[in-house]
Amino acid sequence: MTIAGGHGEGDTTNELYRPNGLFVDDDQKEIIADCWNHRIMQWKNGDTANGQVVAGGNDSGKGLHQLYWPSDVLIGKETDSLIICDPVNRRVVRWPRRSDTTQGEILIDKIDCWGLVMDEQRYLYVSGDGKHEVRRYQLGEKKGTLVVGGNGKGNGLNQLNFPTYLFVDRDHSVYVSDYNNHRVVKWVEGTKKGIVVAGGQDVGDALIQLSHPNGIFADTLGTLYVADERNHRVMRWTQGDKKQGTVIVGGNGEGAEANQFTVPYGFSFDRHGNLYVADRDNHRVQRFSIEKDL
Image 1 (spheres, helix red, strand yellow):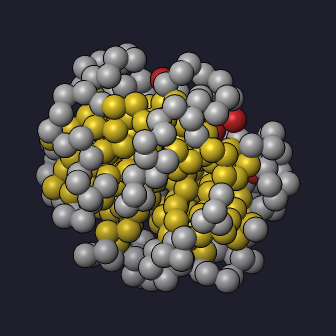
Image 2: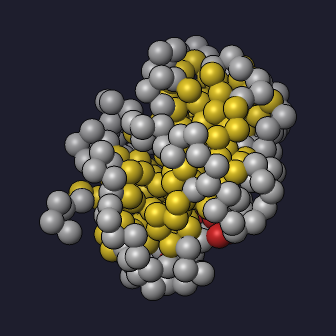
Image 3: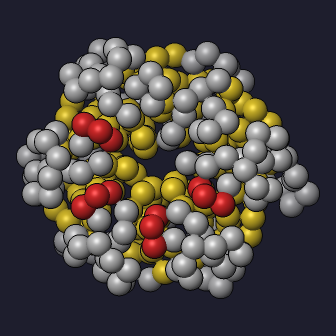
């Protein structure tokens, strides 16, 4: 079902304009990077009519009260703040979630960022398309530590080609959507090369292939979920079956029906296992109940 947007592109509080990343908090509030509206929106669980602007929304710009095409967002629980990738401004910013907040602060600047994720030790991982790498930051740190890539653009196992969204598991292995290589790679902490865990068989729509992967998530069993952008579907790879995935939602062609996507981007699971997908070019967020026997 549609739980945010779905009224066409627009900038009112019941509309979205090309949403990218999203994050579902413990109260099942959806935090959405409403990219082309240059703002972060929050939708309360059960209230599908209107969202609330919680960061940006002051036109595009580089002021501390502005964002420019925000691509991803997460919640820093320790400080109850939003951490936002602000790519055109080449920065990562933090906005307190207080109702009187009118501007953010710069956490990291001069960075080509796209995706964000935080591990349980509060290290922040940021993907960058400029150097085709992922760096890890302690909050307050400006330089960070290289953890993935850093060997230029390419398709070698020590390279990336436009990394987008990220996931970090309990062992601090980093999963990266390697967008232009049409694969997801897993880098075990401390290693110099990644392992292809989904796709990597050229671009295509077969079950062994991906076409421009975006949002990713791995559960505690190592099952991997991938938003397969140009194939308009979300896929699942189970651990031990690296050759072929399964379509769990979408895969019915490009469209705006309840079982279709038009360019799925970021996604998130809530604590009940429901899947939320930013359906970018339908300007909406869709929620799915994923059956365990799929």
